Image 1 (cartoon, rainbow, N blue to C red):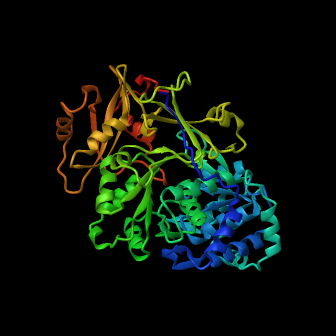
Image 2: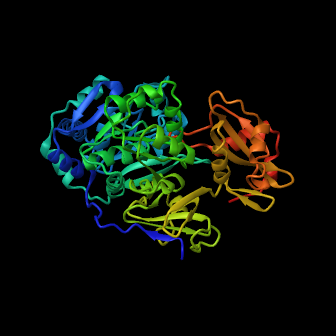
Length: 543
């Protein structure tokens, strides 16, 4: 049996634009809460939220923005960000998400490469002066006509525009669901980021079906501590909620474990999102037991593979009985596989689920492209409604990612079992070749997670003159644990094959990470190679 599966589903895909979908929800549940921004003290019902969206859209329309224009949004999580998201969607203006961790060089690149006419931005965030950085790059961006900063007179004026019901409605009715509506720049390990271009059809369907698989209704309240600029926040969070009539809850501008727990307790959230490190931080709060999390029933863990032990603690200590894992990438809108909420504990803990509704997946030999038998590791490919339109203005890199049969090549290593469940082995680029043996870091990490003194761990390959590569484990010890290198090595001996035992151990407080919680293993390799005085030229090429 080959490693191919299709997410056959009775409910059809939506033929909606984002704006029309929002208006249908508003008509159905106008008085239900749509958005709560805890740190701003703001609340909107669906009727109030839609009116705020229409006011901003009317102001943008009157200022000359129209379908196909690009408008950037740069800043931390806030209500204004989301109003911009839906206002641009109603007009067909393509929203360009900008990572709040970017600095002037990256900001200039994404604004220039996407050709933004406008930029909506926070004035500052986490000690960074966004306004100053915008001023610094404006001279090099001839297409950038205007920058509007949140909580300024210019923003207040636009956000209070007189609603042009006919104008916004006409703009909305002129849209097609296959048209591009969002550009998200993916964080690459080399070179400049690529602008994954997504349509209404891509992201409204992904949000809708992700929300459906965790059972969202207008009675649900979704805690969203993940960044809005990323698919996890704006698609799996915002669009999953609004397409089902649920409430979006933002605990803080950026992730804070205490604020997240407080929001869940005070707002009686039923769902909680995060990457594994976020859940680890929440569970590690000294006053964790003081928060009433009894309303939580579901949630999604994504962004990086979920450690089995962390998943078990989330279910037992947080009481989230229907926690699922979603897997995908920005280029697939993002979710391609998901654990169903009625699935077994084993599948929730050890897999990333089965193919999502209306999605095709397969696992191939990365060298030949041949579809592999079930159980054999290979590259994970996805095809279907969620695959992006391409990288903005970059046909060459688009062709490298999407083949002639429209399969998206993810670069992830995975296996598929006889029931179609997918297990992530690692990244093709992360696979370690030690003396001719293929070692998958994920397998070693899962084993080390079972050590009672280890809170978090990442395994990488570093150059080795004899074997080409050697394993190195970066370990975050559990609070209060007395852990030594000898302890770790002794724990491994006799339990895993000798070539899987790390040669180097490094104890750390955290890992280099992106703002979305993805561990940057390439940075770890660079740091380790320098610290250990290794020659990077001796490493065996793994891609």
